[in-house]
Length: 305
Image: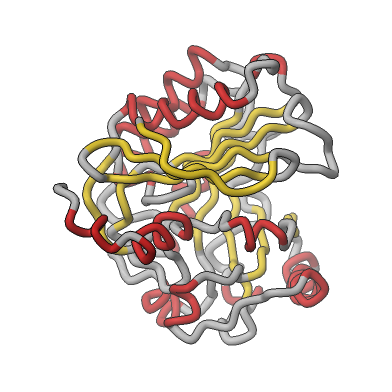
């Protein structure tokens, strides 16, 4: 791994850009929550699982230029590199260590992610793996393997990217073969364990994208599913696709709070997730750093795959 760049602040988030091999690059993130404390209290590491991404979500800068999957060692190498940045800390003594497989790539399309999760259980059994997925079609066996691996942790965070309650709009926003709502519902129920986090349905809210709480109740039982609401953060891809992003904290808070009420009255546990808006300047949204590098260094496109 050859480090190419870093951007951010130690007390909030640093985004790293690294060349893995033959010009192929990934991003990964080292972050903490200033409201909670330093990394000894809560440490969040976000890693990539693919070179680019084949899904091509309309709001994500990581889509396109897909060059394949990272292997087990390449995924683990990102985690180890973050730990090396804070040699004074022992990750095993961290109050909450979250490893998110949610940067570049769709984790459910890479079998090596399961291998990396098993490594995490062996080396850092107190950690919590977090998987963000759009539930690609035909990957039932991968989710079976994830279910098996999840038994090695006291908690796991499984998040399904929904983004809208309009099925036709969802096909446009996530233009890749995906599981049906009934299939996702059955899958989520199998992951549910009393005392652990409920699988969550994530909606990145934008004024132009319909999210109507009562449209999902026939499929997703509040007993088994939570709702996670975030603002649609600004990305170049979202702008190119004429999606309205949320740039101010005040507007994001209002948008999320209003929609949270709609889900809450239906019995859902609602997670209101509004990050520090400064992270948008850092480039903490998926694919932003690689995209900027490619724009500044067009010869990157000529690197051998």
